[in-house]
Amino acid sequence: DIQMTQSPSSLSASVGDRVTITCRASQSISSYLNWYQQKPGKAPKLLIFAASSLQSGVPSRFSGSGSGTDFTLTISSLQPEDFATYCCQQSYSTPWTFGQGTRVEIK
Amino acid sequence: QLQLQESGPGLVKPSETLSLTCTVSGGSISSSNYYWGWIRQPPGKGLEWIGSVIYSGSTYDNPSLKSRVTTSVDTSKNQFSLKLNSVTAADTAVYYCARHVRRDTIITLGFDPWGQGTLVTVSS
Image 1 (tube, chains in turn brown, cyan):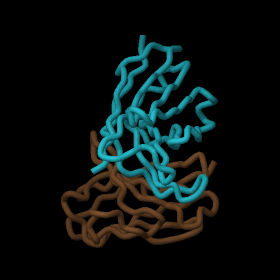
Image 2 (image 1 turned 90 degrees about the vertical axis):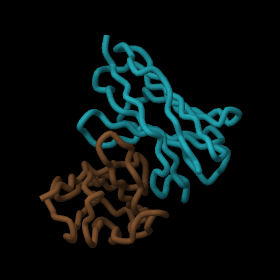
Image 3 (image 1 turned 45 degrees about the vertical axis):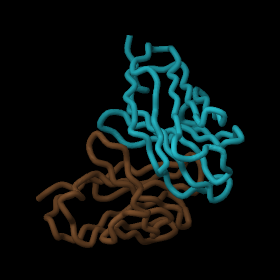
Image 4 (image 1 turned 135 degrees about the vertical axis):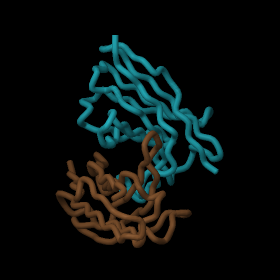
């Protein structure tokens, strides 16, 4: 199985901050990396697919980059509605696997 | 707008079979472009992919569940289903259904949209 490791596991940030979350795959997954946002009691929401493609309707302050084993999710200017948990997922090979999540909290 | 809705018992006894159905509305389940998947999330923990099915009935399951999983599709009802047998307390979780775009045989493009999720508790 491909293991997905995110860092940090949590972070505190202020509105307007630039936030970066990283995700590392245990083997190359080309660009088949997806990012999700999840708020308490809600289903995950797809933000970025194929490493850098913005899902329709997602604000442009979200961006993704990377290929191979190392990937990054960036929020250019954190907004109040962005406080949530973010997780990555590889869709390159089965079993499709998720990272453990990064909680973004208010400083 | 495509919507997915999970349904099934919220309480299952240990050693019995968990059965859930996902009803798809606003679009057809009969497309070779999509897989229809099940994902679960134990309370306070991360997401785990369980299994996926395509309209033809072909399936992929997570080997970590040790062949306890059966996924199936009913195109006449625009539904797909999950059965997980021999459940234990460790199977207590919120279960989600979701669609994912099929790029190649096993390469996909992320789960979207998702159902709202249904909590299944395994307890006697």
